[in-house]
Length: 109
Image 1: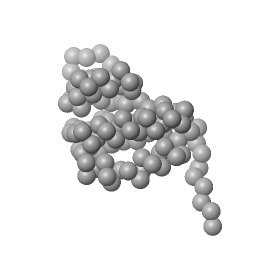
Image 2: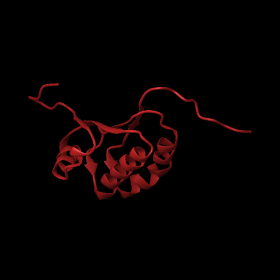
Image 3: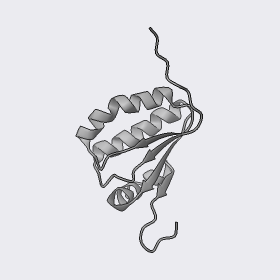
Image 4: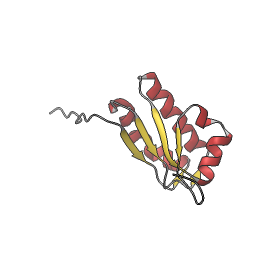
């Protein structure tokens, strides 16, 4: 029996957990591989729940971006806030991967 994924037009959305560290990334690897193999359009990574982002998590995001780019697809980070947003800006990841920050208190939406 052959199983083929349903092809749906539009972006693929990946919602990440609160802690994006080496252990979490190891568990996400099969899902990331599937997204790269099956995404037909842009991939949106929702970081709304992410409060902790270490080097492994950052590396996974950048590697996902590079793999998608090689296949002619794009990656967008959305709902980025707090320390993860500060880290991504400090490392200038926002200059390579589009980043939509989550409005905080006193910030316009």
